[in-house]
Length: 208
Image (cartoon, rainbow, N blue to C red; front, side, top):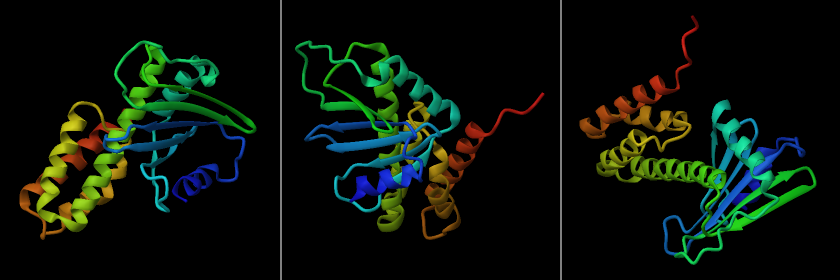
């Protein structure tokens, strides 16, 4: 099972390692279901299918992972409700779950007014957006070479809106596009631009 495999990959022999698990179920949306599991060192598993043996893995940097776990702590490790209770439109059932050893806490919500819960939800929405672009780009690169430039345009748009996390996970596919002359030149140029932009963004600050 995809989720089980993902959890096994994350565990890595450290069963007591704290995990933040986010899930969202929203029939009719794209994707209709998603689950993201994150450990404190930034290692993550993304899955949008409940039965798939190949989940996507990614690694957040220390600052990003630290921010997410700090928000979990502010939310009392999900040991309290965050649902607003307001009569608002259905926006999907979402849940935050904290797992640490034999301790598990979970809170579910449709809409929340809690600013920390909103911030945490946005982080997981950014991860979902990022992984959706990764799936779309990898699929286009393999099966729809004429559609690669469109996939890159969408990725670039999200990056310019600061919605992409862990851009290193795109390097392999982008570099393959750059080097393969069977892709359109405009796609190869855009892929090269994105590789350079991502690397400039993630480069460590120079030491004084």
